[in-house]
Length: 94
Image (tube, rainbow, N blue to C red):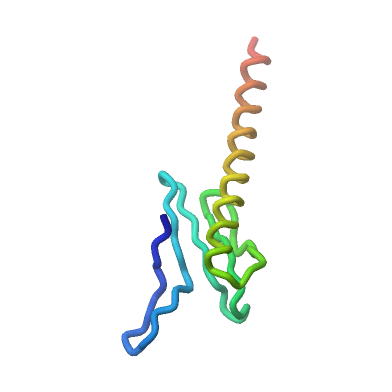
């Protein structure tokens, strides 16, 4: 589900992911670390206008799971917003 898209230097002997990307049927989001924030993980999803949302964890697996939960919640909110707009337009036709 997630793909490591970390930029590694050629001289790097260890490959420890710091940027993971998931493409959920066209909705792309990243779980990533942020410079000067230590081992904390963050969520960024430009499709949902989310930038550097703290996942409040230093554990990569927990961050990945929290990101899926958060993106799912945001998608449901967006669907409801669009459904409410459709209902409004349909109920206020003249």
